[in-house]
Length: 341
Image (tube, rainbow, N blue to C red):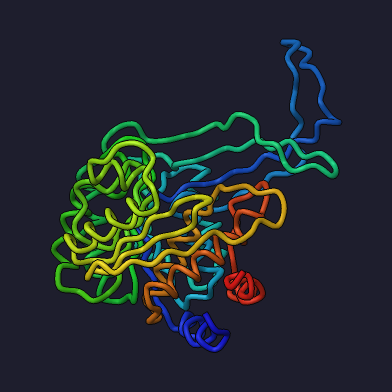
């Protein structure tokens, strides 16, 4: 990608309106100073003293963080939180990003706020070390009234935006935002639309309407009924077949092997991973890919250009330790020469 083409695509980001539908989580980081460890007088167990606490949007919120870092003009999170302290923190963290509109983000007493509590041991001159996480999730089905309200309001929102990201992060189907009601609505409303709708789900995309699929190699293999570790040629073939079947672009992340994409006509592209520049933390890399693919396509990028921009972003994010990082346009521009090796 030439600098001129990079500027032409990314200059359009400031005019984009993006909807993000999915499971928004509060990432709460507890920074622990091991030099202050003591024993509890009551139990004798070690006490980890937290010297700093920070919170940021996680899960679908990580995608939002990346969309915001790219400078989209308006961002519409579609999801829910509970009427609890974590919900207050999550709404405050979402609203702190420029351009975020919370008109479609529901606060309800019928759900608890999805929270990842991440204790981090912070030592001088050492990468942060994460201890066992403490998660708060919903383990019962999303009430029909909540699911229907989100689906109906989202149908109205689709007419206002340039791209849509669907991020299904829950472990148990029907307990989050991306319910059958939401998927049925998306299938109806996006059937003849030219607005890019890119979907990613930690449980795989089986049963999703034919939107733009984004997944990893293992998810691709499962969806296509393949077994074992796929070769790059197998990934290309399966991706091309799926894109032709859905008549939508398909993207596949391959960890250290890079990124592959296929167009509806079956044409494929592959971008290798950029060279490592130090210690890495892969948390959040896939979400940065999703955000960059969506904005690039909305801005008129080709399949290969979208993959190149996503590769730049993910390379930046994996080198940010102890956090789910983001990549700005300026940071990506500085890394642009690395695309050519």
